[in-house]
Length: 343
Image (cartoon, rainbow, N blue to C red; front, side, top):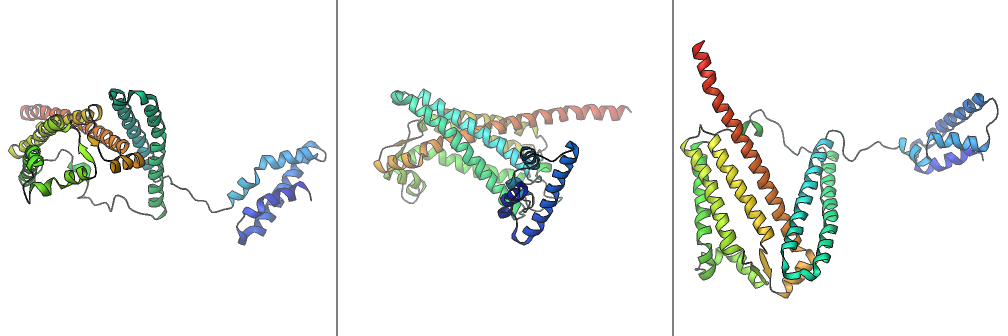
């Protein structure tokens, strides 16, 4: 058996069964022709080392066999830009979440003796969480690619979300948003008293999640009342004032954008306060403590708050940019009108 036969024996098991003989015959001809061309170039018969060099230059048998298999990609060129955008967002979320978690550990003096251990756990969690998110993103987009799904639905000319940016809502939409927000604000104002006395058919139902948490050994942290309670109330009032601005003067889009920017900044402040001045929840029961250790609930909660804080920061930047753009447009309109009148 010469070297070519040995080479083809490495290719044979990996070839498609119905095309194996034809492919091997083709490869045998290609390789022998290369050997002959090399021998003609040197003007003599090839040594064994030179024959090995010719075969090695053609490629490893596994890679050669792969050329004849079905050519598939996990994520094709159509969806790769979407995957790349999502992967960068995942990295940013992972970094922000674990920096916030590390900061919360540094400012928490209750377990200073385990500081190095906790920081080491956060460092390990940074990689495991990031790889898990990127893996989930890759699998999701690969499924979309494989089954030819339409993640954004069917495009319609009247259903373009980017054309709605900066568009004034109707007074009916603004009024409905105000009514819903005022109900939420009223509940939030009454929450400390509801939690204390819990009236039948109202308080007991409303605070059922809190009561259930207390039964399993989880209590609200002291940061809630009055600190977070006050900050969330102020943020809600700022947000609803933007709806009032929409209702009063729908044509002025700059003012609501500015108000929403301040509401988003309040959301950033709330998130940072929750991360740095927590904890949000205090585990008092053995069952909840065991679940926290098993599922790392505290870590996931910190990551969720960090992601929400990042989202509020992005929203603040967006509304700030929108406010500046709308102001420039408003300033340009009188100049254009005056120029048209003069002409």
